Image (cartoon, rainbow, N blue to C red; front, side, top):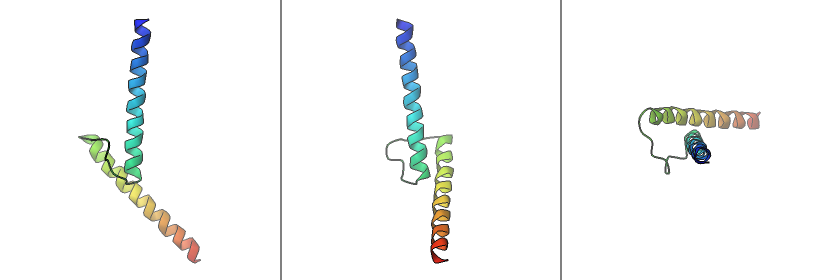
Length: 71
């Protein structure tokens, strides 16, 4: 019984960490900011790179949409 409770707690902890990582990734990719999750170290630099990729893709989408509307 105790082992089962421990396994449930571990799975729950991993699930919450994955949700936080997903939220950080979506925040970064859509360039909304980091208000809720403080990040440090290597993930901070990866988030910066991901933010630039999101900004670039948004720009590329806008340019291609305007180009299609003008032709």
